[in-house]
Length: 68
Image (cartoon, rainbow, N blue to C red; front, top):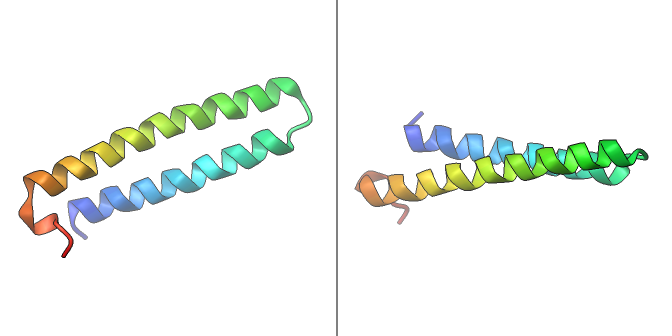
């Protein structure tokens, strides 16, 4: 597996986690739990953005990663 494949797989996993946290926030009865899940979702979103930025950098830096 190439490095970019691993990073893309990580981004996909993080998207799944973000979605699960969103569902937990929406389904929680307690306001404190909703807030905690929402805050965690925002943190995960920032990580996802950073990883996606890195994928974009890799594509620009490494011609073999460009998709045709």
